[in-house]
Length: 194
Image 1: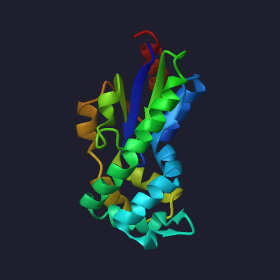
Image 2: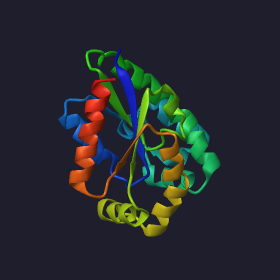
Image 3: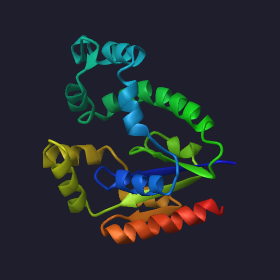
Image 4: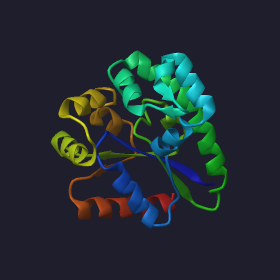
């Protein structure tokens, strides 16, 4: 039976890099955040967002993601409301995708908020990617147009590494590229034999 392996880690930990390592081994990867972004452009979700957060967030069927981020990342209650709109749709989408992956021994579901969204409950195993806070902040500053304050605000909305690690089956320290790749390969071999 195909196993669902959750891959998570805080913002800037390098989850996508690790997901790409697994992909290079032929493992199907579902990137929940990317799929959520796509689904947020569907008229069904756009209408729910408009009703919940106001008409001004949608112009010409386009979501103002920046304005929405400002609202939800500074207000845990609003973030929860957004998650209640988006997560059920992502779950449905994932299950359809998963049905087509049955020939693989396992798949990776990469999600930044795997624990926060309780998606971990659907996983057979969990991998958490960790990196020092300063390393993570630097990566995000190089990747995104944002500020240190905005990054710290987003980090506050995610579980701590310690909390994630405590509930994980595997941990990948993603500082040294070669070490992270080796650890990923070791986990891949283990998962293929479970």
